[in-house]
Image 1 (tube, one colour):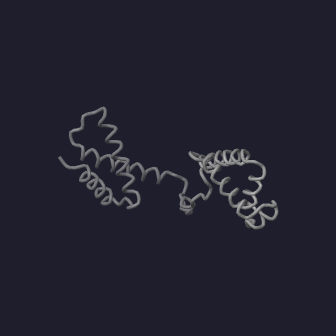
Image 2: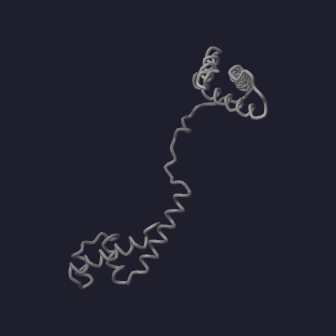
Image 3: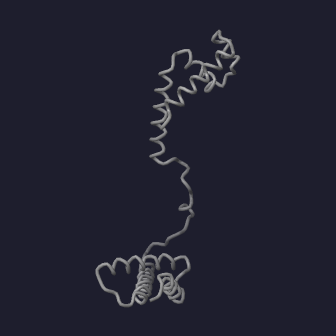
Length: 159
């Protein structure tokens, strides 16, 4: 009994000898293999290799007939290779949930700590500027930023 790989090679070479394009051969062999596997579930097959080769050849004949009768011309525009830069819907929902969770965490901080953290992270102010604005020492502002960051990291842990 021949291995499945040998049978697939034989079906592939039979299609190539028939003049099927190299691009279509693997698809046809795969489709034939799937059909044979499905057929074997309900029927006894004595010559699996012969059935596989015959199925692949029949599929190529069917494809050629369909192509000949089809009034449409398929043009490769290359659009099938353009990658959509937009994130998947699941990613969008996940990010929205994380943002909601982060916002809840920010709202849990006291008003001054939140103001200091947002000034540093969003407004990109220096610690010295924030200290002057809040009337605090630089060390106190650094401590507030560190505590707020740690608090938010714990709040977001697992999200």
